[in-house]
Length: 142
Length: 255
Image (cartoon, rainbow over all chains, first blue to last red; front, top):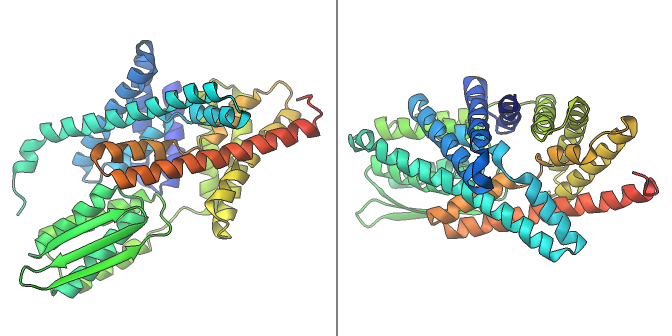
């Protein structure tokens, strides 16, 4: 059920990003897939969990982009939305304004590392995809 | 195509990509590819605030254009269309008039109406409330407050109110809306509602993208985006804090 909610959240953001029709729903499905892997990896701790989820989302986005001939962000951006550590960023800022410096640092660091894990997942998966599809790229277009 | 025209067209396509929220790497790569398709050489430097394109024909003629970028948003449909156009240009080398006609069409791509955007905000905030462990009442409250927050953001955008004030007011609308909902429905998990609706404002995606830029080696872009993310987060938090204080004072600390 949570997977469905994540897909709905991605769908909402897909509209902000002005996506329409099939692409909108494909992007929303990406959000669901990401959350599925996120829950499956729940035992691995927040870093690994986010890394694995963003790996799966990027793999999905790269495959969709190549089969549908659309740029990767169309599928990637809305699908990453449910993962993003909005809650911890918010809490870190609240701690900062309350003057709770140590809590601010620990929450802020958690948010930063989760963001880093997501970004690393994206970079790792897209580089891996580039290697896999190297044959297609090597075929000269002009 | 002569080099002046090529310079105009590549710069315009790059500018459109940049203002539609495409990655820096894509902007630079697209311009270089188009120039190469017409047998010219391009050197491009792009950051979120500016675009510099130099086109040279290899016979001593060079043209440099710069564009300053003030506003950009995430319009993935436009990125998609520009990408398709760039592929077409690289494959066919079409005439200038055809490219300009296509660019005109892309500039006028339809946007969602205000009502549709409000509905999307409601959907997103409601889904986040359920995702964060809220029940039906939290989701319903997030639905309503999500619409309110998005409405504030749109009004600020149309009146050119600036993103700083817009984020402060958005954070405040979020807390006050959730507070009002908790007056109507006793026992509402107010914090769940606040965090779900804040997902519409919090710059999480901006932070992720800035990390990606940093890892990819676009250091200036990465640093700019992380500074922007920090600013947005601070503004939202200021709005939240002020309105929480006002709310506690209004309700005499009962809620």
